[in-house]
Image (cartoon, rainbow over the protein chains, first blue to last red):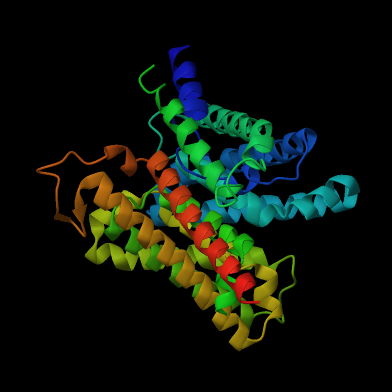
Length: 192
Length: 197
């Protein structure tokens, strides 16, 4: 139970992928999406994160050390991610045209890759991850942490783009300022 | 070309592309190292994809750029690791994230549709803005967060530096301040031009 809680606390709060690694800000700062759009995007990214973690963790943790090729960790992660995104494009084009249209508009390769790669690589550097099960748990809760912060920014989007703010602060500058404050607040959970 | 620098949306895209790298560039040395790695990945992957554009489509070009970028990043980090072993090790996962930042700095559809001179100037401008931003933000964070500059102690014996600036939250704050200064200067320039008209 304590292992579960430490993985959840690290993935969602203290080691939040967006606020401590600064990954995935393109999605948080997007002004246009609706609530359902955010859920869809996070859902697709979560599936990619889960599958790429499930595939890349055993390869990197067990196969590469046997061959003495640990230096290829990044390349393996990227190949797995690219393969999964390519497969998602091909399969959805054949069977789910609506999802394919969404993926096409979302530009999954460029917007997802940093986030998915970041989470995959963090599985090997985070002290909370000790085995395959905790790695998968960490990947899932990293996405929940990402969804949490995305929803915080979605709920604040009216204030962050308000006409009352000085023109030079409106949009991205004030979003980053608020992100810095939220990041500090999340760091307060360190040691819990 | 200079007018592009006054495009707020374009500038924000450049900043968002290199934002993850801000998390680790808390000193000028790390800022410089990660900039060099990103610029090398950007230029080599863009030129390679440009050379192979007959074989690639708009859909497959981002995949190719990403894979080439990771390869370049791996090689350049290994070579730089000969001279800066500890600093490269301290960059951790961000060495590979630099590959994605390099891909995000210049759009892949631009790479396969532009002519060679356009590609070189586009890559050059993006690389210059991205690396200048990383170096300036790391310089500010090292000075105020560590009381030193390029590793030389300046004032930390007399005043306590603001250690918070060395954290990722400090990186976000520095980025926000730099963006605000940029928006202020662009706004002033626009006003001056309108007054001249």
